[in-house]
Length: 311
Image (cartoon, rainbow, N blue to C red):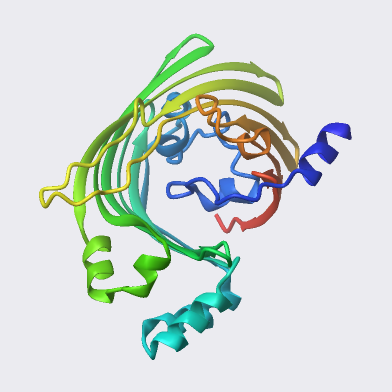
């Protein structure tokens, strides 16, 4: 209980870390999915999970969309034109607001120990901070990529590796008062449509302990090993993708008519600039006939989800 109270009272205040390749199922349970990933999502969470894939599967097309800060959407529209005073007023109205939207789709093929996917994931974030010295921050990223992964079982220990090719379009632009005063929409548009190519890899290992009606998995993953840097032919600066060292623990109770899957992840172990509350995610999924119910805690915020299974 003390552990839970610690996280409730120290909710994260800074901008969220990336959810570009997160699944809706995992986000419902706090995005704590590193040790439980044993389907196509293993290509993005933990390639060692490919060693637990059963059968031949093809997600022909999956799509996900999301948004936050919808109440500020009308305020953002005021930035598109008008007089200088109107623009200044619009900036003032956005102080403290975070407006985010995301859209993505993928097609993924898996069979035991192997997986291949094509995906296109994009997101845009606008926020305004510091009313005394106003700063407008725009981050727009769209990734079109290919990913290929292998997972190999060696008894209870599973090893995995995936390779990624990513074409990234976008920019991460902090705008101070002088930049805002001379804001050129054409220049901003040119910045966020610049693109570059990057190559990356993820490595994972899992210890899987099976038992009747129950299994446990402990995992370690190094995502975007080193860092993914994007080379732009036009010389534009494309946002990098930071590496992330994650430890995960997941349990799977498969009982008659019900399944229970609690999990916890500790992310960004290689970063000292993030508070502990930004690093720990935990959640649970309760599977009932036709219905899955999910809840969790991600970076200091509650999450919840539901899934409907129609065969």
